[in-house]
Image 1 (cartoon, rainbow, N blue to C red):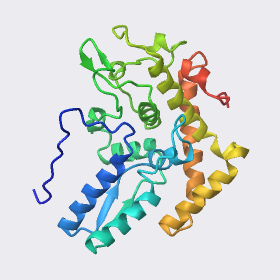
Image 2: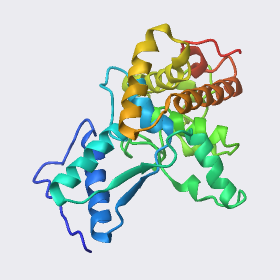
Image 3: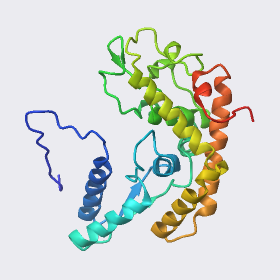
Image 4: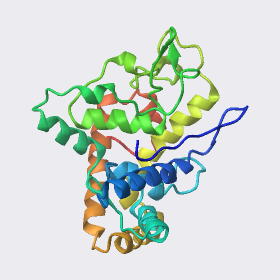
Length: 269
């Protein structure tokens, strides 16, 4: 009520095709709320893979995505200082943990009894593309869904198969993994799935890639400047934990899985 706003899209649908403006919009609204509440601090709940992964290993042919990155949020702090003369800090409490570790820590707070996490959505696709028998699901194969499924497995949790359109990631082919009532197995969906798989796979083996040595050093330098702290040991631990979770998840799918077949790296270790 303190911060009234409205958006008028006009006659046509209001489409922002890249979704890149979302980070700015969320930061402006949360920063404005902190200003009116005199809080001075905004908690960014994103875990390490979501905040840093899109800058370390961009998905497909996309540019590096900094919308949940400390470097971007430092610019938002400067923005609010210039606009309102007020210091607002954006704090990343889970930056050095995987999403699986965050989910596991969340469950520990209720001793495993809280099931609210299962009601959340990670998939960005709408009901036109991810409905089965007129019921909306999550696709299960985009980068966001793949990270969700990886994290649920890492936290020793389970979801019903019908949470996703692609119910079975252990299937030998992409088409065979989809629900029986789904008839929109398009080439675009397959491209989303390949990009999501390779994004998480490349992130898992980033430290072992000689080609990534300099980009990783640069990323660590930028993070250190944004956070004003020594971060390389924390970044290395995060990447090692992600690799451990990814290997375990891939092994659980079995060698016949279409996801395992797409991955660039040997998952047998």
